[in-house]
Amino acid sequence: MSRGVGRAGAGQGAAAALQLLVTLSFLPSVVEAQVTGVLDDCLCDVDSIDNFNTFKIFPKIKKLQERDYFRYYKVNLKRPCPFWAEDGHCSIKDCHVEPCPESKIPVGIKAGSSNKYLKVANNTKELEDCEQASKLGAINSTLSNQSREAFIDWARYDDSQDHFCELDDERSPAAQYVDLLLNPERYTGYKGPSAWRVWNSIYEENCFKPRSVYRPLNPLAPSRGEDDGESFYTWLEGLCLEKRVFYKLISGLHASINLHLCANYLLEETWGKPTWGPNMKEFKRRFDPVETKGEGPRRLKNLYFLYLIELRALSKVAPYFERSIVDLYTGNVKEDADTKTLLLNIFQDTKSFPMHFDEKSMFAGDKKGAKSLKEEFRLHFKNISRIMDCVGCDKCRLWGKLQTQGLGTALKILFSEKEIQKLPENSPSKGFQLTRQEIVALLNAFGRLSTSIKELQNFKVLLQHSSFI
Image (cartoon, rainbow, N blue to C red; front, side):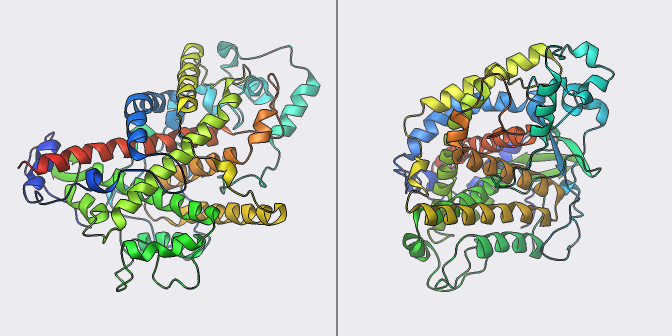
């Protein structure tokens, strides 16, 4: 995958994209003609999601991602790959991630435990020891010693049984805060055997592939003959709903990441001033129905399916955040209040969506078999989260870990409905909790999906424009 070089000057990304369109005027309207109608395994249609995302969700989620609470993500990019020998990290400059200096992190985020969104958490000894604690006004002197000890015990509990992801140890010296706004997800040039091995391991070893299917599931794999394209996916129909859903989630995540790369591509670099913008040729290579033999539109439909799953999780977890005890804490009282108001507003929108995916249709059979299948589902996804530590490009690893953790958190929410319904209003719950990292990953991952669908609409406009050139 080579870097496209346009002829437009810096700041003329749109013009460079249109220049590419001159040679691509024969393109069929991928989105217009192929990605429409009702999605499989649910009752929602593509147009409804497009309208809902464009007019309700996207503007608000974009604002939320710019708030201090959601822009700083703590991650360990130095964890070794647990499955194979390291290939070495990507040496391309765009692979680099710039960690955030300690002085830039809001004091309310860096001081205290990972559960730094609860007002109770703001009363731990760690924050009291912070030299700026007196300025933050977060100490509740009425909290009893017994309650304090119970909270600390709860905060350290081992909830590995309901985690769908391998979580980073935030206390590790290698874990660093990253400003997501200064390290955007975009095309870095990372490719080749390292990238292929990561996706191959995800698809071939974790997506419940039947033994009768010989062709690789990995879209990056070379062509394997007559069973390529849309006809290849007949094997999916033979799987149970849960295993079909698992494959669609991974395919949708892959499609979303690819859309980000196509939409934010390095078009030109003149005098050290890079121009980023949409790359139509790359979009065509990954999603055009002709070039992909019908697979491209299916990948895009899986993106919409993934959006529905995470949208459903947000609507389900709303009661968790609506409690007065929850405070998205940075230390800036006014900003924290505004951030929570915006988040609750987004939750109200998610609950108003009329065509949610019904997760109750999953794991609904015989109890013993359903429990076993759910555990297999969870462990497969957890394994995928571990594979993210094998990504050789730091920026790709950062966004891969964040989006995987976000989806894992969404799955955790969907399968914890009873625990969420039993949450106490004014005290922590041992039955269900989210760390700050899970919250940041959940909303940013959904923000990435929202952006993907918005970018897809932009490509649709470019494709329509091309037919008149």
